[in-house]
Image (tube, rainbow over all chains, first blue to last red; front, side):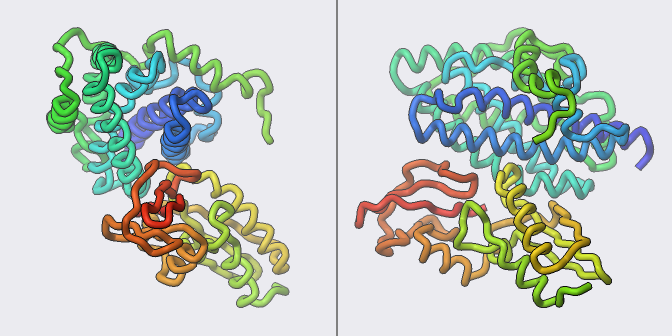
Length: 254
Length: 151
């Protein structure tokens, strides 16, 4: 691989690693707060899967970046502007419907990304993908069941699910944008073209929303910027929690 | 090297999964390889689920097993390829799981109750006490049980 390709791959791996780290941290807020015990356990398990994938990806990103930082440095010592996760994963939990909407839209995307990466030419990414695609498939079963249950539920659950989808929808186009370096990775078959995943994603989302008797949110302005470090206000608060220990006691180990 | 090769293999192979003590890391397919070169031992393991929190404990237990077998110089390497699936679990290991009250992974859709053998069971929660297990209940004997998910 050329230096430019390694840098492109490092950026790609870091973006996905950040997505998983942030959504894991965001979701873990629900632990001890979920509406029922089984759901509490489910959300904790899902958060753990995301954290595991984040660990593998940030380890690999650190290897590719080769600048002396390890996965922990990347997770705990980067500033908000250095994080390159999508805006979707940093959106607040708000109510349970918002959490379900965020996860469902992300899970459908993840299944497509990992499925494509299982056959990519990068052995490490393909290895991570082989596990992650099964976990993502399991996650989408859970989140889509909730979309249907809340959407086709009571007047109140339906209202909340519709509001939540409306909120999250504006952050979905960012997932399917090609970032600098992606075209080179696609040409070398190291990663799928994110633009190719959008139509399949939309078809699947439309099918689930149909079952939930919910309309696909109207097309409106889409928000982007997370991939270049321009985040919504929510990420800073989230990182304050995530990084508190290392910022307060630098280098602490236990 | 003071320790004998079979003793090293036996010690490492006997390390159990702390979350499923009925199975060793060898039974589960977590243990991929033990390489012994001169006085240096390399143990190669692979995680089951991406975020399996037992991996750190397993690494510590392998290190303790090696030290108690007299091995001073060793390395524990984690590999991701080829990826772990439940296919790595032996038939004997599946039977041991069942005897321990955990329905083993199966290819079909009918999960039989590990207590009474009934096929009329239902899922209570697709997520259980660990990443690898779901919670089911038997309609015949009424007992709840864990099922090691197909993966």
